[in-house]
Structure formats: structure tokens, C-alpha cells
Image (tube, rainbow, N blue to C red; front, side, top):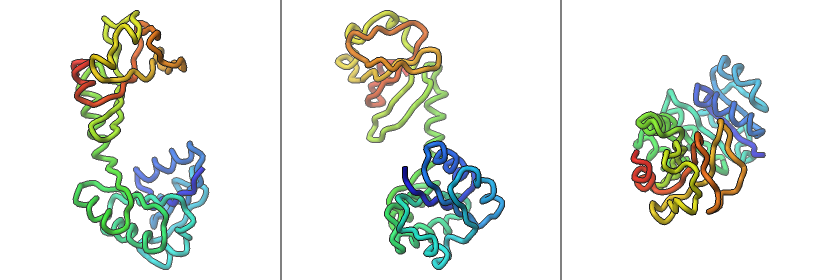
Length: 216
């Protein structure tokens, strides 16, 4: 369990708060809009109304005590930049900030942010890949051109074992898990694992290798 300071409670911030609650982390949520603060109260440990660009207010939160400070402000980049900078000046251990464009990311990384996330860009990439093929059910980018895909099992793979298919040698990809009836099998994948009809599989590798293997 981590202690997290979450600043900015728009749609992205609110959904972040809800997921952190599911993961049982301790969260202090901050926004200058009272209505937004009230909306996340059921999902956070504590919440405060205040301006994160105000150094005195930010200092009063004890930012050094949090494992991670997330700047989720999306409607005012100047406020996001000032907040990230102040957090680092006040001794925050780790600052993660939201950006919409590469130029914003550059400024944030130069002025306090340790890492940057692109929620809109990342979701756009996921949507484009997920819905550009009928055979893809999910996609996770791992960076450096590697990814995890959940794909439909090719008809000619049904009933065959991992060893028989030998996709690691032929396509340089790994089959990580099998999903049947909406649930992942807990069985450890081995060369003797047989692939059943009507399942999807989780595969990992370089994107171009996966695309070549499944004709995506």
C-alpha cells in the first residue's frame, strides 16, 4: 500500500482516484473546485479544497510524506507546470504529471516531473489498434516496440500444443496465457499446453512480429 497525493479531480483524476481506491492505496485528493472534491470523497482517504499553485497551501500538505504525487490537472497547463515545479521544490519523492502533447511533457520533465503520462494519446493508440482488426481484443504497450496482445486463436491452431506450433522460434513471440469464457486459465503455459477451441490467447513480443504472426 502506498500513500499518494492526487492533484486535479477532473475526469482523469476522478477515475484515477477510483482505481487507487480499488487497489487499497491511501489517497489525499486535492482540487480547488469544491464540487469535484465532494465527488471523490467516497473513494479517497482524505480530500482538501485548495489551489496547488499556492506554495503555502501545498507545503501544508506535507508532500515529502507521500510515495507518489500525481498531477492530474488537465484544463490548465500553466497550473500543472507550476504545481509539478513546486512539488519538487518542496521535496516530493516522485512526481508524475499529465500531459496532452510532447511539448508539454518536455516542460514538465524539465520543471519537476519525474515521469509523464499521456491519457488521451495512450487511449487513442489503444482504440486505433483494438478496433482496426476483428481479431484483437486487448492491447498493452510495453515500450521499445514491445507489446502484449489478446488475440483470437487462429482456426488452424485449435487442438495443437504450444510445442507443436513453436511460435517462439517461428515468430519470436511468447504465448503467456489462455482465456476461455471470459476467464484466464491459471494453468502454467508449457510446451505441452493444448489450445482449446473458442479461446483467446495473450501473446507478448515485438509488435511487428505479432502483426506478422496473426496477419494484423
